[in-house]
Image (cartoon, rainbow, N blue to C red; front, top):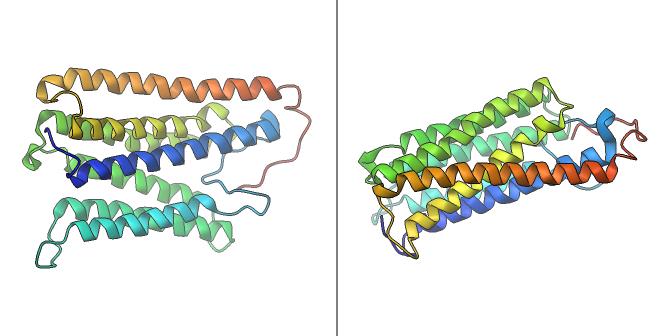
Length: 257
């Protein structure tokens, strides 16, 4: 531990944290927008969300862009001085990017009525979570020189995608539940907080962190869960209170996207 901003991993963790933040806030905004517009009787969860009246597939396009460009960045970072790719850790990240790209392609196919049924989107999204959890498990190894603190951080960050698979299953079984819909942005925001914490530990701007600080990290992990859950639930309560008088006036079912 104890590195500087010259370490590319610091930037990598920050970028991934920003991706999780944007995606989670997007989910939260679209879920609450749909709840406010349709009310309890018309609300329905979607595997992905679009923007505007023309239903622009923003989320699938975002997945494609991240999968392709971030995957290429990992490939470029894994090249040795002779131009050969030999970095195992970068290959692990490229595998996640490949599955994310396929998820985006499936979503586009569903949006344009090329791929059916809609449940395929959930299956590929679960595959992203499974691959991400696998990534964190294979990096949860002291042979990479991360120490106990580093392995615990990977283990904590790997739990979110695996739990996310359970959340997605609940969405498929209960597509009209606002409480279940909020689970996705909650775990996404927590994942963003975890990657921000990793960047802080890698950079160590104020004090050196080592294996003695493992209990502090786990305490931060719990606090981040409570904060992200509180943020999402508070936003939902405020939206519900502001729209409860209009909640039952619109009986039109929403678009599945």
